[in-house]
Length: 269
Ligand code: CIR
Image (cartoon, rainbow, N blue to C red; front, side, top):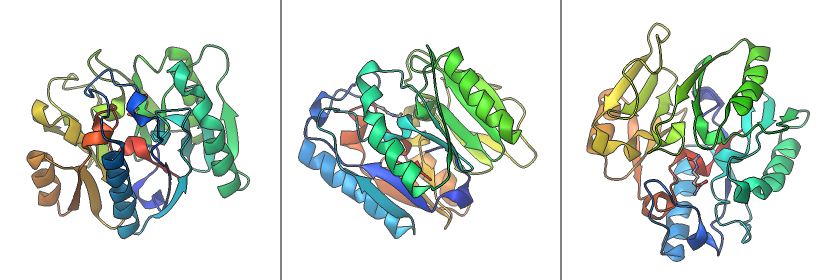
């Protein structure tokens, strides 16, 4: 989940791989999952890596009626003790949300929750946070009404929200960038204009990666200085290590096959 600060990443919610996972949506970089056993092994390795880095992980049962249910990031937006429950942009994914919302509401007793209404649509995967600054992708899943709903929540905190138009060849904002720390945005060349993120706060920077490492730009930075990265992206790995971060590489092939990246598989709360 890309909506919490680094020092808020102590607990994560994930969801098991369903038996129906081969039917997950794959329209972007994925060609469709083919090996559920391998997907389960990779998903467990992801959970293990989070735990190894000190994160308490809660795993919800899979929902076999929803092949995309492992991608929990899209279903809830948790910001500083408040939660926005978006209406997901893919109709087949709408009913994934109730158990996730129920879990978070009971884990975060007293959390302020709001829903989206009308035609507003948003996937949590379109949101990226850099300290007090938020970015939202206007994408095939997230529309202007959804963005307005997110803006109301962020206005409450006085956090700035900047809109980034997602090119048609990408699914979400998190498909093409991430914030491994609270002052770095990692993004690939060739998808966004050089000034897409605007002028950043002092001390923050966008680090541009080669286009062939686009998938590698989705990372999960953790409070102990570890960054989970996908296996096979040497520039991403070297760039983070040069900045004193410790990388842990994960084989994401069966997650990627369903257009999923590292951040998609968890919600920090
Ligand atoms: C979908 O198309 O909705 C899923 N197959 C992939 C969702 C990936 N989620 C994300 O990037 N946050």
